[in-house]
Length: 112
Image 1 (cartoon, rainbow, N blue to C red):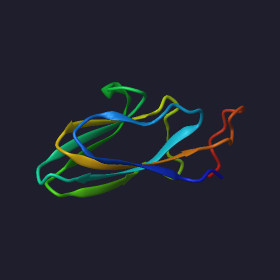
Image 2: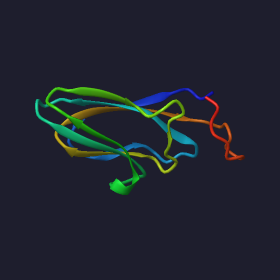
Image 3: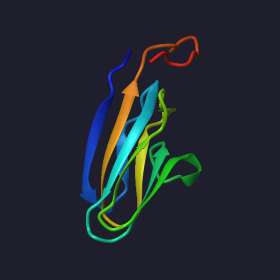
Image 4: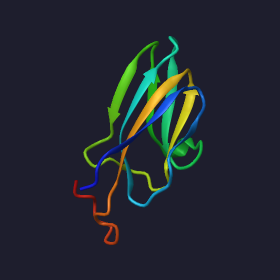
C-alpha cells in the first residue's frame, strides 16, 4: 500500500503544476481555502498545463470558505501530473496524492 503524500500551495492567484508526471500517480483529495475575503474558482486538472478538457475537479468558493474534496477510495489516475488552475480569487490549495506500484505491469486497479 502506498502512503498518501501532500503538497501545500501557498495563497496565490496564479496557476501552477502541483505534482510532476509520475507513473501510477493518483489524486486522492484536494483542500481549497479562499483567503482574500472574496469569491474564488479553482480547476484541478490532470496534466502539465491549463486544459479544461482534463479537469478532475471544479471548486467554487464564497468569501473565506474552505472545502475538502475527496475523489474516492482509490483516487483518480493522473499519470501526466496534477495542475492547479486558479480561475479567480486567491486560494490556498493542499493536494493529497499517492503513487502505487500495485498493478504497474498488469494494468490492474490499485489495491489500497
